[in-house]
Amino acid sequence: MSWLLAFFIAVFSPARAALQRRAWSAKAEILQSVGISERGTGSKAQFLYECCALPGQQTLEAHVSASASIGSGEVSYLSSMGLSCPNKGLITSLSFERAGGAASDSTYQYSYKCTANEGLSAETLDALQCRELSTPPSDSNLTKAMQQEIKEEVLPLEVGSVENDNTEWVSVKTGSFSKPVVIGGVPDMRGSDEAIVRIRNVQPGSFELRLDEPVPCRDQWHVRTPIDWLVVEAGVHTLDTTLPCGVKMAAGTVSVAGNKKFVEVPFPPDAQFMEVPILLVQVQTYSTGRVFVKQRVKDLSPTAFKIALETQGSDLKDPKNPANFGEEVVGWVAFSHPHNSELDSKPVGATMNGGITPAALTEKPYTIDFGSSIPGAHFFASIVTYNGHHAAQLRVDERGDDGAQIFIQEETCTPLDMVHPKKEKVAWIVIGPLVSNSPSDEVGGWWGALANHHLLCENDEGLSGFQLQTTGQGAEKIFYKYTCCQHLAA
Image (cartoon, rainbow, N blue to C red; front, side, top):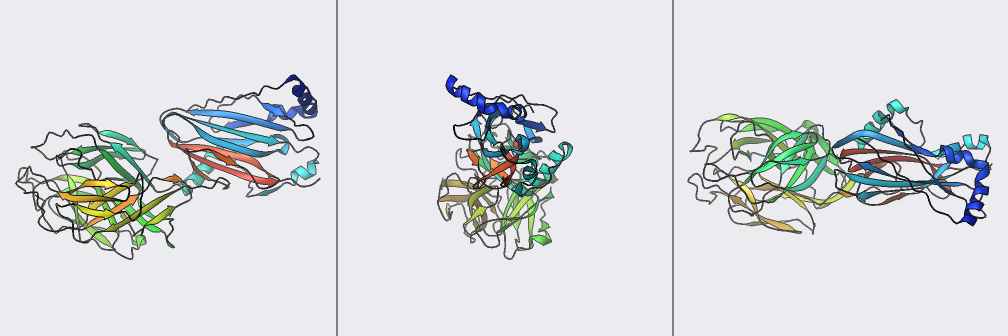
């Protein structure tokens, strides 16, 4: 990763410049030492400064403005910056914004102002009172220390949407998850041919997606369709929400053979679901080469569920290709019921809701009410019963900000009549767009690179330092930490 730093010099009138030169003369060393150092990367920045002293003021202010252009590719904990003022001066303001560009090639601009401690003795400077102040790590340990703080702040899920290619796999970039589990959304009826979402090549920062059609009667060419996706870190998590105890979320994977048998999958003991959870399931691999492979669930309880692979036909058997096939990895994500709550974590916030329908889903449209209007929502659903033994998948008939109409679709390559024999239950989750939720004056936290931010300490306090680090594809997330200090009277 390369950082390109550019700085700006203001243009002053001759009279004002003369006034400023007189004010600077005693503190010229400040102009030489104010700066930004890039730690842990081996590169150094060059600086120009805009400095001014307003009439009647004895403090010298140094303004620094810079931009950092982040190139394409995965950027993860690669660079950190420490901003500081000389002679124990304090940063009295700092602003930061994303200046534009695609996610993979964005420019971020920041500026800050230093105020010198003129008139204070060395003893007083050494006695500056600071909140949240700790000994900064050495250069060699800075990145490691900040990584640990970042990991503690990362939200264990991410949502997005992507349009499928007509025939090819589409690569989707995500945040850097250690053990990602991917869930595909429910495709709508753009293209009436039967279709299911397939996932493969799930990695810490990406996965691939396409739509499968049944064989041999379909051509595997499908109309371009927007597909929601959800990535969750495997394990057990508690999402901070407006509910008193938050929302419990557990995720994992299991290998399932195409042998027409159900496999029991227990939830982790520390998940401790008090009621039947909302369960989403998705095949994660394309290992066997079998097309139109999906999953069926039964016996969902607070402690476990059973899962099997199915393709076409009925009773987990494809009459056109009845042979057993090898294993595929199936991912699962289970939620306690969010009850139309607000995701209220430190990094981001979002509206979320979900539930399990009664046994009512057939080939006829069934309305899911989101509970409120959620523009830009991401919608996920899975059949969680096996009442009708025909092969089945979900499709969206209509969808709006406040709900969706879904139905069970059957394939017609085998002699099925498109009428599902019995009604099924469906588990569903809707999650609104993730929006930055960190207050601008928080000491430490995340910024999504979405808007302008301005930091100021209270009253006569100033910033004693600022740390900045990028992470994720295109550096779309920014970690920051700073300390507020107060001048003492001489």
